[in-house]
Length: 424
Image (cartoon, rainbow, N blue to C red):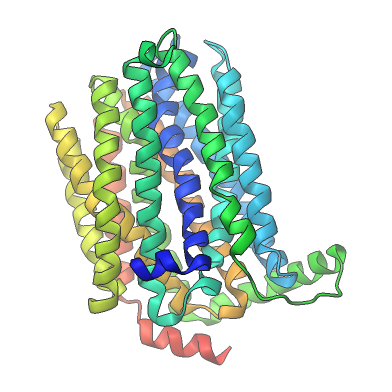
């Protein structure tokens, strides 16, 4: 890891994970579900608020599903991955800041702003992932990918710690109450995200192509290339198989991330206990992500992903029957051990299977499937909870997706995929 701290371009790229993880941790996984259920949508029933929270996540993800591959194709045409990243990051930053102005009971407005923030976050990650090709070589992909996720866990955890302190003891910071502290947290996320995006903007370089082509030509060429990429993905059997496997298993992972706090609240757990559990996940995730990078390099990224999936299956079964807060803490530790690892190794495995000069375009498909999974998972959980009036039953839907993803991943031949990518 020390080598990456000395490499300005790699460190600047990884710091964007440090930057955007403030949103993923403080808002998406942490305060938004709590504030939405107890403050903005306090007049709704528990199952209704869970349904609308799942719907908000799903709508934002669906928009990314439709846009990601198109934008990726256009960005590759004009070497515009950084510019698209900055555009979406600014959208997420502005929307995160705007959440601080939403009044009590205004759950619909909160949903709309949150959808915009999720779109900014997810859209920027599409192009951030694609830039990994430009900041690392084939041999270092696992470690560089894991380094980014590790910094994300650490950065998100540090800011979240301060925000949690503010909500637990608002008077220490000169604040009136916990709700004011949460509002200030939204502002702090926006500032954190903006400040730590600057290094990527300044020091991450991407190869320049088509210098003389204009924006309209890039759009036309990009859309044409997108159609061609659909054909290439169908021909690249290994890439297609991995994408389908990823689609299933990342559905379970993302759904757990986005709905864990809501699930805990529905079981009657205290919100402060749930926040502490999230903090545990963040700080366990930092060294665990780095360890998975080493595991992927030494024993193979596919094996690392399979280990993480088995752990997630056990977590899902355990979550169905848990009754005590200490059990939620235990799950937080276990999830922290594998969450960053499965994300990092999935990204580095996919980067091995695709043509390097079409990374944004192919990562558009990668993130499209990942976000399409996040369309189904949260909505499915919310829908099952609504019709069955049982949040416990809804968590079991995650188990099915993890099992299917594991089985499909078993048949992914990495060496064959690398060979096919070189031939394109």
